[in-house]
Image (cartoon, rainbow, N blue to C red; front, top):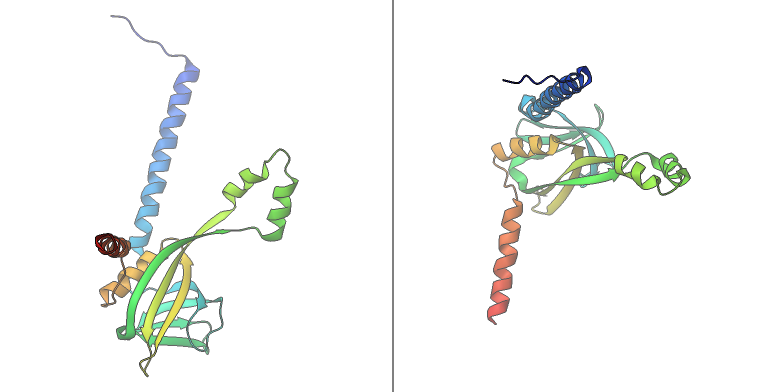
Length: 187
């Protein structure tokens, strides 16, 4: 039987990749466990894009579920809330935004040979968006849009769905569209 002898450098490379794979697996497991670690009825840091009366557009604050209401609070004195029972529909989505501002744009232009496009690959941040349709006390239909950190949209969606809010699922929308197309084809 012949014995295989590997050079010392090959063994070191294999050990490095083994440690790297184990480390990456641990990080991935932590990322997937993070949303579940959030407590129910948690307070989420959000940006109120628009929709709540008395709250300015693009305002940062906290969003929480308290006493059967969805409450957005900017400061101790500035807040708005709606009863969860008045929420008619909830949609979630993802958004990609370039970060870095004017400085990043100038830096991308200064990189020779099209290297600025490589910088663009790393200068984006993903966000979750949540849009609500709700009815006010007079029966008027309103909407509100919030921007959350990546992964927090699913937490809010789960909490509101558990409270009885109707959540729009993307597959519902596609099946409606294909049914309408079929009706038009028959005519």
